[in-house]
Amino acid sequence: MARYLKPPWMQQHVGNRIAPLFQPSLLSKLSVPGRRTGQWHTTPVAVLDYEGARYLVSYRGESHWARNLRESRHGRLQRKRQVEEITVTEVPVEERPPLLEAYGARFGKMPTVGPVLRALPDPADHPVFRIT
Image (cartoon, rainbow, N blue to C red; front, side, top):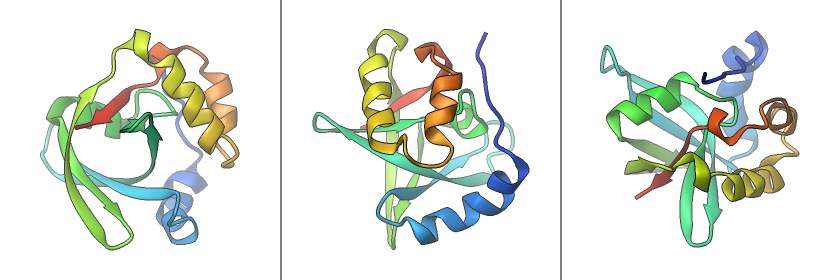
């Protein structure tokens, strides 16, 4: 069964809105159409560069953005003022461990990333998408 650790209210409603302002070199904004309504939703993400490819990792587990992205397979990625239309493919579970290790090494010092990755150690709990 897929797991998800919901962020605390303060992170979800305040932190996610201001984080890209304070860490623009680390965070991008991902916009994805909703799987039911088609309405676009935006959330901050850290894009992992690994062995020449870029990945989106849902470190909290089966988040709404991950489920929406799995359904639509496309979205918009904004970093600073540049907007990029993206398509993605989901990474199979057996290929996720080195990506999650690299993600933890790169972003694990961010306030919520390390503890959440330790709380959800199973790679199957973390949807990972390769940007194509």
